[in-house]
View 1 (tube, rainbow, N blue to C red):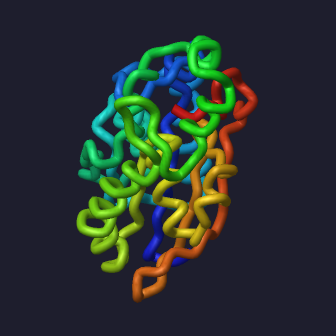
View 2: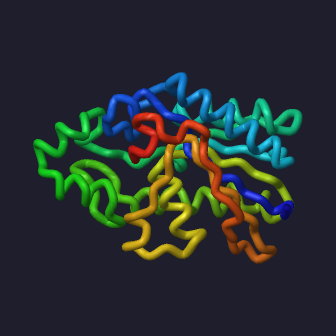
Length: 219
């Protein structure tokens, strides 16, 4: 496998995923299912012969813990996560902490669907996917990509929307195509990078228990 490798991973199932709420910037912990997802993905990556030279996570605990659990199995000696708020989940504004069914009742299912899936429409007081990309991509370009291009095998653990934003760029997705992109909890994608910085998707990896409740909810 290419030495210029990036593994993008969504954190394991969180309490917010399980409770069906818009988590956003709420710092809710992993569930036991989420911890198992992280450990299993770490084992899967180890079995593929992947050992990380560098690791980054969002500044939210569910991503940091997932990253540490994966590194316990795949990190080279001395590697610890660098936490960055630029990789945080999108800010859901007034929806933060609200049950998703309650939000649909209050604002209507169609409007909530637009807020959740569209590229450039933000929920009240929150961020759109475009806003999330505007902070995540510059951080990736300045802090993560240089090490990859030097040959580092790198892990980035973040969230459904910050990862949707990055994969939109890596895979050249249109604004319409990114609406349909789902990244479940505990899922990972392996990218190989060319010397000039272009990303090529190599493989998607899924946790053994990817059908657990809440695993595919974004936010």
